[in-house]
Structures are given as C-alpha cells and as structure tokens.
Image (tube, rainbow, N blue to C red):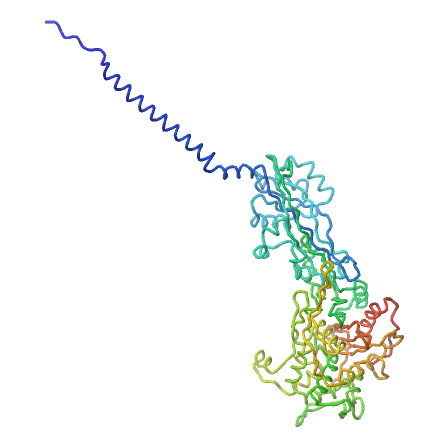
Length: 623
C-alpha cells in the first residue's frame, strides 16, 4: 500500500508568522521612532532654552567691568589717593584642562611665590563660574611679554589690565587714609558679590574703609563672544560702570607735612581742628608706614618687620593712643569750678607746694617744689600750672561733677570722627570703678583726676576736640575729615552746646591760657617770641611711672620709654579761632619746650602760610 505524501510547506502558518514578525518589527520601528521624536522634542522644544543657554555660555560670556574708585583730595585739591594702571595674571578655571600642569608651565616664565599660589587657590574656592581668578598682581613689562609669547601653551590664562590704588604721599597720610587690600574670605561673605565681581580690592582701615560704599562705585558688565580657547572675538553688549564718588577732605597736605617734620623721629601725635566747622586740618601719628605695600598684598617679611618694630608704626596714636591728659585738663576743670560756683576768678588758695586731704597725712606734691607763691588764684594756677590749686579744686568739686562736666567736652566718649578703630579714652566715675574694679571710689583718686592723672585717659583727638570746645566758647562738634563729596559740602554735626556757663567764665579761662604763652611766668612763654597772632595754650607733662613720695623725678635714671610724656594744646587767633591743636609726644618730658614748638609750627603753617624756622628754645623750665 503506497505511503501518503508528506506536506513540505505550510503556507498558512508561514503567513501567520510573517505577519507577527512584521507587526513586531513595525512596533519596534514605531517605538524607536517615538523615542527619537520625543527626545528631539525634549531637546528642541521643552528644554530648548536650557541647552541654548549652555551653548551660549561656551560662546558668550558676561564679564564684569570694575568701576573706577573715587579719588581723594585735600582741601586745596592736592591728590592724596589715586588709581594707576596695573596688570594682573589671571586664570579661568573652566578653560584649563590640567590646572597643576598649567601652573607649572607658568612658573617657567613668571616667578610665582608660595603666597601667590596659596592666595590663588583661596580665590578659586569663592569664585563664580567662569570668573577670572588673579594669580599674580602688578606684572612687569618683561613678564607681560613672556606671557604673550607663551600664551598658546596656557589656554585660560590672561593678562588683565586694571586700575589699582596708589598713595602718592606714602607715609604722610597712612594713618588717616588707611589703605585698600585684596578681599578676604570673611569680607567676601558680607559684601555684595555682584557689585564686587569686577574688583579684587576693598577698603581695609581708615577713610578707605569708612567711606567704602561711597568710593567703590557700581559694577558694569559686557557680553562678549569668545572662541573655543576663551579669547574674546567681539563685544555684543556693554553697560558702563558707575565710578565711585571723589571726595575732598578738610586736611591740608602742607600742614600735614609740617606737623610730620616737626615730630621728626619722635613717637607721638598731632591733631589740628578748625573750631568753626569741626574740620580736621591735620592728623599725624609717628612713626608711620607706606600704605602702598598693602594694596596688592604685603609680603610676610615686610609685615613682620612692621609688627615687630618696637615703635609700633601700624599703631594710630591719634585714635588709639590713650594718655593721661595731665595739666592740659586744667582749663576745663577751672571752667568747672566757675560753672558750679566752687571758686571765683579771685578765689585764692594757699600753696605750700603740697596738698593733703582733710584728716590725711599723705602729701600730694606740686611739680614745682616749694609751690608757686603763698597763695594762687585761678589765673596763676593756669598760667603756672599749679597742681596744688587743682588738687583742692578737684576735692571741692568731687568726682561726680568732674565726670559730668568732662563728658560735655567729649572726654570719655568716642568723638564720632569719620574714621575707624577710635577708642573712647576714660573719664572715670564711681560707677565705672565699681563695675570694672569691684570697689568704691576714694577721695585721693579725685585728687589725681584734678591734674589729669590717675585713671583718666584721653586720645590726642579728644584733646583737640575739647580744646576746640574752649576755642568756640562751648560748641562740641563731631570732628570731620570729609569736607565735600564732589561739589556737595558735608557739615560736621553739632553734638552739644555749653550755653549755661556763667557770664565771663569763658574769657577768664581763655585769658589765662593766653598768658601761658605771653605771661612772664607762663609755662610756654618761649612760644610767644616773634608771634604774629594771638595764641592761647596749655602745657602738660604726664607721668608714665609713679614716683614715690619724697623722691624727685630724675630723667637720667629712667629708661627712655619710662620718662614723662609731653603734651600741649592751643588755639588761635584767640578772638576768632581758626585752628585748635593738640600735641602728644611720648616720653618727651616737657610740654612747653618739646610739644609746644610742634604746635607753633603747625599754626604758623596754617595761619601764616610760611615755613619760617622757629626761634631757638633754651633755658626754659616748664611743667
């Protein structure tokens, strides 16, 4: 029986399989097409702006333009702080593939210190994306040329031209103007990062810091197109920065120079104020330093030299030095005696050369052994600087009234000067001693305050301010360095007015201060020689170390830095004062013969516009 024929091909099943495979293939194709379409939709439509921005970021950069810092002038238009061109080597991190290798290549043609590299890495940590970080400031012309030749080896490295601060007078105004310096990490946290994106500098101390907001200005910007190497091809858009405001000061550069030269190599301070306006004519602290060293970063060697100098050149004695006012305070206490009715101009006090508290045995000695006569009145006490008179006057007034009256002259409080780091001094009181020393006030401490010693401390600026209060017959003004912003004048605020002083009291004290200079027994009578204007003043000699009762002060037996300080205050012309001066010379010993001539030279320079030499000083015995 023949076998059945086997079917070799199942056409129907093959068609079914084919249809399934075709549908699966079409499904895969549609699926992949959908994925591609959706991806294109996402890139080209949904996220278009994101990727366009990222693309533009590689091609277009927003670069900040630093504003020009405002200039600083003295009262006569002489430039005290300016901006000069400088070139800085910068790095844009995003343009550099291997930073370590790039730095190594740079060091082949530009010398970099460890400090330069350390500061650069600090700057990297606080920068914004694509922001240029400075690597080295103030490139020389030779270094700029080397960078230009090797630029192809270091993509992302550029030489930026910018203006940096310069102080043409160097040390002369260092303690007044202060200086600008590179922005620190701490400062970076408190400044506006946008407004400071175009500059690396900020005011550190002095006027530069106090008026930072005014001097800095407002940053500008420009949109630029760059190539793949970060080089600028063209500027697309630009907004100019707003320059900082230029300011004019009350300072007189010529008087400042005279005061500095008059102090010479002495450690001390000079302050000159216009009593009518509160404007500061001169403010000198010696020794000084060159603020230009700090602008682009002072070297560790130079900074250590300044810090370790025993004469403390970085120390602003005008605002931070606190000294016993000594006898310069006596005219104010004389006014207090008249104000409270404790004495009259004719009240006479016995002067055996010492004073003792009632019931006490301790003798408070006068600086002049044997005293100044059988009895002395207020005029004699100021002219001859009689300690005994003011011992008794202070005892009668008491510390409460002395404290209250001293505050009205700006003692024991910051003056409000437009500068930084001012100290308060100390006008002691019962409350102060209880709070700070944990004990009550003793009458003997009042006696010491009566001659400007003991706990009492003042800054040279406070001395000048209190002297200007006497000169103006009662106006206490906040001293001001700033005279005008552009063409707009700035006025010093009136802090207080002594209107309740008895009639004639001002003239009584001022006449006595004038006789300190012109009187036959005045402690600064040498200053009256060839004087071309009326001058009122007061000498002072402040103890640095205590002298035991019964012992005599012997300068030769003391180290230089333990000798007395020399002080002098004055104003002129007496009838219509234009200038009040305070001078403190550390360890200068004699106010009349050491500090007084400095004040005289300053006043001559301001009032007479002359640099005529002072008469020779000899044979003068003063407090």
